[in-house]
Length: 299
Image (cartoon, rainbow, N blue to C red; front, side):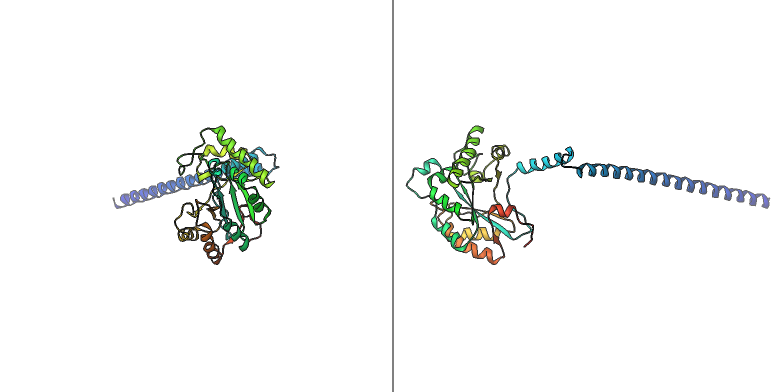
């Protein structure tokens, strides 16, 4: 009886061992199968990636490469530029010269010569966005700005009229054709005054919608806005302009100011403080072109 029970226990033991070995074998086989499946999947993904990379590194006629470039161009055309590279301590002071035909008929000087004189005296590069009406009204001043290598002249539409609403009370351009004519007429007027073809465009008041970029791009221009609002338009004092400008400027900033006159009476006074304070922070002034197209050599 004892021997019978012992034999039965031994048989049960070896049966259990056999079952465990079988389970272990199935587990190992399953793990091997899973690993092989994953390895095959990774290999296939690598082959696909390699093929895609090959299409991108072929000649410039590659349809895939052209598609990638065209997509990037499309992205660039769907929004306005607001700043330059953030890795260099360069900044651009930009001045809007706003006018309408109605303002032209008023007995008022729609710019402050002290601003220009200060920039010339301190040798500060700057970019001026002129409306076509302004360039026609002040051809000699426009030529003076053009002849100075410190300065860059760009397109600010023909009149200070809004491409979209609301826009600080500016009269709106109602149709697509009016917008096209505003861009092209300004381009022609400024070219006649400067002898140069402009590259950049700024919307009056900074107001626009995505579709308004089309007439700008079609004219061969890039839309440029800003990332620092000086607040000089209708400001009550120079100190507020200084504080807003200096505290918000960073590497690559585009600062929007105005070329003085009744609508920005404190800009020149503010610049006398803004320029040295920004210099003390290590910033270097540049035209818009230089800011957006920096040399390969780092500073």
